[in-house]
Length: 261
Image (tube, rainbow, N blue to C red; front, side, top):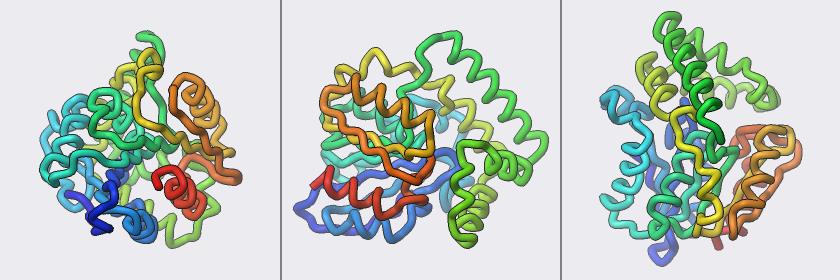
């Protein structure tokens, strides 16, 4: 399923791809409605996520299959080209789509995203770590995982969010099954993703890289990617961390409007 908000028919549609433990609706209605002022908005639910979270098979959460499925979603909606916006894991998938199906991407926005790990050794080590976490989720359950995930340094800046937003994030994560979280880690993790570093120089669409100034790892990645991508712009948002669309929604929206107008 997708959250769909109608916009001006002459505008280029937007396709939003959420991150791990996310869903289309959790971008937030105000953000989606703001984008819809310029064109139709589709915020997808990846397999096993969102209202139909029980409607999935293990093979649905394989890297190439998910990338192809995102393009198929555009086909089913009769959309030829879209502004692609991906957050974290969704950004990695959107990047893969832009490299594989450049004719379907009008612009590409990557929020706190990575082109993958450069060496086979690093990818193997990450697959081992993700596999161990996946097994722990299956053995210890989703509530344990949700508490563990929220405690990661990557999400420390979320502590400044309003209590109701933090509770909404928590409840959204709790809504997933242990099986889908484990399958997502194994099928869509950074260790499973191919390294796209050697192909960044061939990335055709105009690309916006968004990062939070407090997220040092992804700030550095965004700067590296900007140097490698021919038509790239990097926007660093002060005071924000990894989840820009939640931590700095106005700045996020302003950057998108300026980039895609």
